[in-house]
Amino acid sequence: MNGLTRDEAIGFMLVACKQADLNLIDTQIIMKKMRAAFDTVTPEEAVKIGNEWYEQKWRGPKK
Image (cartoon, rainbow, N blue to C red; front, side):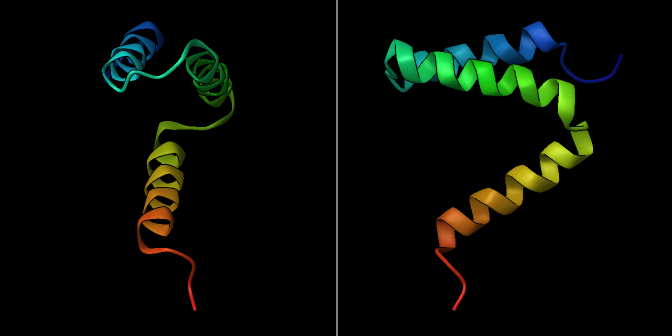
Protein backbone atom coordinates (compact mmCIF):
# COMPACT_ATOMS: atom_id res chain seq x y z
CA MET A 1 0.00 0.00 0.00
CA ASN A 2 1.35 3.43 -0.93
CA GLY A 3 1.00 6.40 1.36
CA LEU A 4 -0.05 6.40 4.97
CA THR A 5 -2.24 3.86 6.67
CA ARG A 6 -5.46 5.07 8.25
CA ASP A 7 -3.93 4.77 11.73
CA GLU A 8 -0.80 6.67 10.69
CA ALA A 9 -2.84 9.50 9.17
CA ILE A 10 -4.99 9.77 12.30
CA GLY A 11 -1.82 9.75 14.40
CA PHE A 12 -0.42 12.70 12.45
CA MET A 13 -3.77 14.49 12.78
CA LEU A 14 -3.71 13.97 16.55
CA VAL A 15 -0.14 15.31 16.76
CA ALA A 16 -1.25 18.40 14.81
CA CYS A 17 -4.26 18.87 17.12
CA LYS A 18 -1.95 18.62 20.14
CA GLN A 19 0.51 21.10 18.65
CA ALA A 20 -2.37 23.50 17.89
CA ASP A 21 -3.60 23.04 21.47
CA LEU A 22 -7.10 22.11 20.32
CA ASN A 23 -9.57 21.08 22.97
CA LEU A 24 -10.85 17.52 23.25
CA ILE A 25 -14.27 18.25 21.71
CA ASP A 26 -12.79 19.86 18.58
CA THR A 27 -10.26 17.03 18.29
CA GLN A 28 -13.02 14.42 18.53
CA ILE A 29 -15.07 16.21 15.86
CA ILE A 30 -12.09 16.31 13.52
CA MET A 31 -11.31 12.65 14.17
CA LYS A 32 -14.92 11.59 13.51
CA LYS A 33 -15.03 13.57 10.26
CA MET A 34 -11.63 12.24 9.19
CA ARG A 35 -12.67 8.63 9.77
CA ALA A 36 -15.86 9.19 7.76
CA ALA A 37 -13.86 10.80 4.94
CA PHE A 38 -11.65 7.70 4.70
CA ASP A 39 -14.77 5.69 3.90
CA THR A 40 -16.40 8.12 1.46
CA VAL A 41 -13.67 10.03 -0.38
CA THR A 42 -10.82 8.71 -2.51
CA PRO A 43 -7.29 10.02 -1.87
CA GLU A 44 -7.43 11.93 -5.15
CA GLU A 45 -10.77 13.51 -4.24
CA ALA A 46 -9.43 14.39 -0.79
CA VAL A 47 -6.51 16.31 -2.30
CA LYS A 48 -8.78 18.15 -4.75
CA ILE A 49 -11.58 18.94 -2.29
CA GLY A 50 -9.17 19.87 0.51
CA ASN A 51 -7.05 22.16 -1.65
CA GLU A 52 -10.11 23.87 -3.16
CA TRP A 53 -11.62 24.42 0.30
CA TYR A 54 -8.35 25.79 1.70
CA GLU A 55 -7.85 28.14 -1.26
CA GLN A 56 -11.41 29.44 -0.88
CA LYS A 57 -10.89 30.06 2.84
CA TRP A 58 -7.51 31.72 2.23
CA ARG A 59 -8.67 33.99 -0.57
CA GLY A 60 -12.22 34.59 0.65
CA PRO A 61 -15.44 34.34 -1.32
CA LYS A 62 -15.35 34.90 -5.08
CA LYS A 63 -16.75 38.21 -6.24
